[in-house]
Structures are given as C-alpha cells and as structure tokens.
Length: 103
Image 1 (cartoon, rainbow, N blue to C red):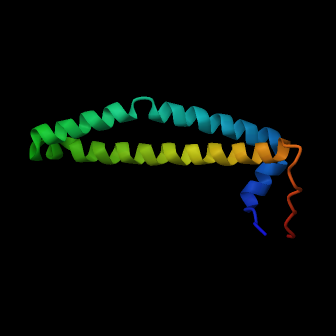
Image 2 (cartoon, rainbow, N blue to C red; image 1 turned 45 degrees about the vertical axis):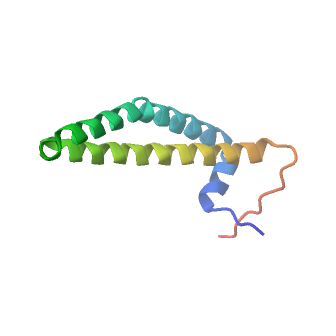
C-alpha cells in the first residue's frame, strides 16, 4: 500500500493553495530557464576559448552559479509536478480516498 508524504496530503486537502503554488512554481521555472541553455553554452565557449585566463576571470564562478540556477529550476519543476499530481488526484472522479494520517 503506497503511503503519501505529509506535504502531499496537505496539498491534497488545500486545493486553492496547491493551485497557486503550482502556478508560482511554473512561472519561476519559466523565468529561471528562459536563457539558461544559451548562457551555459556561451560560458563553456568562453572557458574553452580562453582557458586558464577565463577561469581566473570568473568563468568557473559563473558556471557554478548557472548550475545552481539549473538546480533551482529543477526543484521548481518537481514542485509543479507534485502540485499537479495532487490536484489531478483530488479532481479525478475515479480517485480513491487518501487515508488521513493519525497525529
């Protein structure tokens, strides 16, 4: 029997908050990824072209920052999918009742 996390159960009970959180995470994901591929490829080309000088000029730091932005974008995407799953499960007519956890 699959068990659901406390956060998923909370999202399942709070329909409007789940929808708003899903919308916010979708917009944040879109904002973070709008130019991410272009910036990563430009940074990699800069490092390849100029080598050690590019790394000392902040190319490695910028690559690290872009990697962190990509990880944050992935977290936003996962939150979007979790909210989507909770909403779909709640709104579907064939969904089984989620058992409530005891305190």
